Image (cartoon, rainbow, N blue to C red; front, top):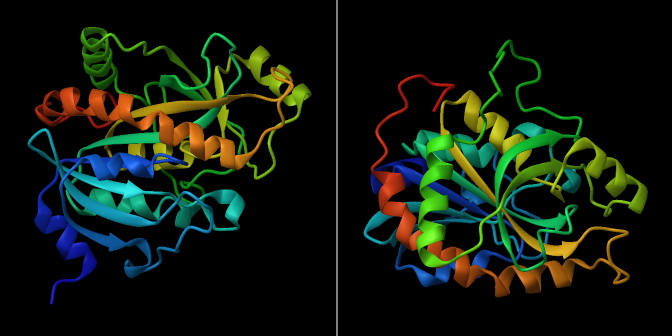
Length: 269
């Protein structure tokens, strides 16, 4: 009987996708070959947060094999940062070369309204953690998010008439939402959106030589930008309502992403 690792690898997908809060319905739009719970992999914990099922789905999207992680592990759940990035190691071991990360985020820049998607150009790591701590991996982070993947997604979004702004994502430790003063600080630092995930995974992906794109589904205005109290259930609901637009973009762009030749130099895709 095949192990979970062998089953993922045998599927033969080059592209991986991790879905953030409220984005799980997206996987239902694609035919699923099989699914495997995260906890069946050694050292991989089960997510504790609502909206994070914790399963890998092997799907076919626009004729392309795609491994989809439905849900993720967060630092604020109490896990070690190496457990948080366990899924990245699993996808890399399965043969994934291009990785797409998604998250639910709050708008720091009011010009990126709730319900929209933002492609991440860069990030600010304010979690205080790195999955590379304890090693001597001095990974170049000058281009975490692949220019050529971003270009493909922008081109397909333009053809589809989908507004896809680029921006900077700030990662905070959570689980509490930020204060208005913290949001003001993030605006000064140059952030456009804020969340509690993605950055440890992005760091690990670059260290493993994966080519990376990442998206924030803007689910709410950050603290101080709206009189409405922040609520995780609202985050999930807005994420679910926004999945159709991203599924459409993914369906048109994925064949071009899968056709990208191997990265000629590991840290400069």
